[in-house]
Length: 314
Ligand code: C5P
Image 1: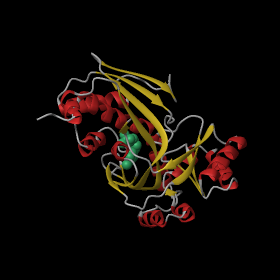
Image 2 (image 1 turned 180 degrees about the vertical axis):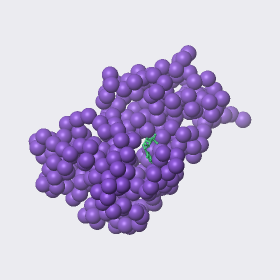
Image 3 (image 1 turned 120 degrees about the horizontal axis):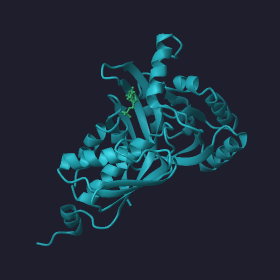
Image 4 (image 1 turned 135 degrees about the vertical axis):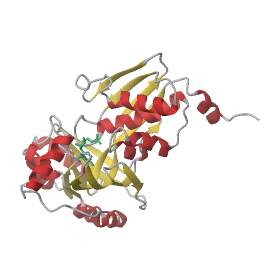
């Protein structure tokens, strides 16, 4: 009997560096229900992973350390409050191994942008440490630990396009024929706080100033099956958009500029302030991104496609 390489690696863990790429997410449909007793809102959402990636590299070490480069370097705390560190501790506690690793984070996903960057990094850290330590957990087990770290983290373990329920942590894949969708991602200056956006939505609803709740994801799921970006465009929606616009009125100009540039639709991503626009194809996406940057309505406009895989080694 000879163990194959994978079994061997799972027994001993990886000796070399483990590099994990993880995508950003947008919500194609973000239906926000009532505030629950635990402080979270009941969600009905369709998550979609797009090709803007962060990367976590895990190396063997005698303690747990984190360094970083890229988006938000110098602004993001690298101590125990960081989701990457919390993810490593959570996995180590679950698996009964010492939480020892040297972790390095390369960020392209903006901080507090509504693209789940922090959650993505936590998902990547779980996958990277699992391989480094040879703990060999299944994706479902990792997603279970992920749920304790944040509502969006389980989705970023899985990736693709998926339905999210509960507070967002219960994820089931949306089975659709393979289609790529082309997006323009307009990144704003500065972030928005997710809890503050939910609080603002509650305030608007109490004041009768919010639009009607989106409700079911049926129309969005049907649109995904049709593979026509014009049909998908008509089905996109985000209950947090009014809140994000109330907190950052300048986003109205960003959405308007995308419309003027020929985007099929534009919405605020998650709790904002990033806005995402659906383009007819990759060429159109490049053109819209250039127009948004020329209009000066965002810090930076990037093109992306989706769906892409969740946190993966390589
Ligand atoms: O789960 P996560 O830590 O990412 O959530 C951050 C904050 O966003 C929560 O503390 C809560 O204020 C808000 N939230 C919510 N309802 C959800 C998800 C998040 O109110 N379903």
